[in-house]
Every structure is written in structure tokens, then in C-alpha cells.
Image (cartoon, rainbow, N blue to C red):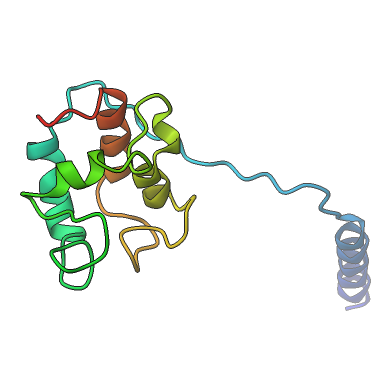
Length: 134
């Protein structure tokens, strides 16, 4: 019995010494890398369905809602006609991409901590490929 008490006390003391000796100097945040898309991204086939499902909703980015209008018939012109939304020379600084990644608040799609599917990678690839209406 005496051995158990002494052993328990010794283990407890070691734990206190170890715990008080721990110190956190730096927090390392590792951001997951987007998988780069090298296939051609089609605005009409790849992006419009995502916008329709997640963005072009009532009171959001639809007719009479907030800019840009991301309904199927107006999405391309709404994005291209405002130079802030799409920046072909520096795709990562495009407002559309920065909203999706949360660099600009509120992050989109609104109310999502992580946007569905691989929207970020698709949008970034589309912009890098020249933001074509294809």
C-alpha cells in the first residue's frame, strides 16, 4: 500500500513539473492548400450551377438583390463589368475569390463556415484561365 501511495505521489509530482514547464511561444497555423485545377473551367457548366444553388437566391445575388447578380443569365456580365470582382492580373486579389476564402467579410456563401464543394479552386482556376464566358 505504501508503494502505491509513493508511486502515485511521484507520478503526480512529475506531472506537475512537466505541466508547469510547458510554455507556448508560437502558434503555427497551417492553411490547407487548394488543389490546383489544371483542366479548363467552364463558366457555364462549372460555375453557374454553383452560383445558382448557393448564391442566386432570393434576397441574395438574384434580381433585385445584392450585387453582383449571379443568376444564370446575368452572372458573367455582373462579374466582368466591375473591375473589383475579377482581377485577371492578380487572381488571388479578385473580390469574388477573396469573399469565398473569407479574406473579405462577410465570407460567401453567407452563413457557411466552409463553402460547398471546391468553389474556391474552381473560381481561382477560372480567373487564372482568363475569366472566359465559356
